[in-house]
Length: 101
Image (tube, rainbow, N blue to C red; front, side):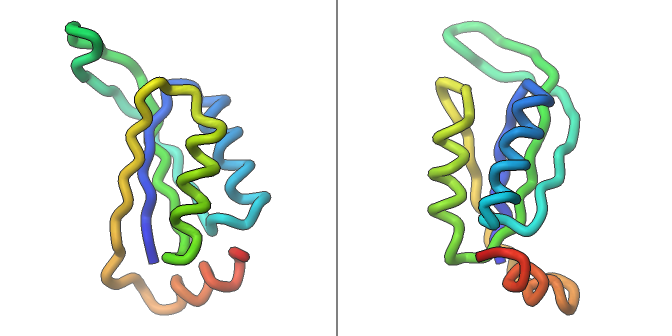
């Protein structure tokens, strides 16, 4: 199982990305978490409200999921992180296999 994490400052776009990934059966679940980000951008420290998308999928769909996110995400510099989940509670991986393509 993999967890893909990305960030976006527009809640409506976060919902749109989530909807596309779910409808195309690329992912089993997306958690959208509100938060604040501070970062360097073009020589300045920026601060913004951002949403973290925590996306659960299976190993075989990671690349296709990343490509789909890149296709619809509006950022100039898009951070996408992939984390391998060593273990999860019983039944989670089976559920992900069941609900994704």
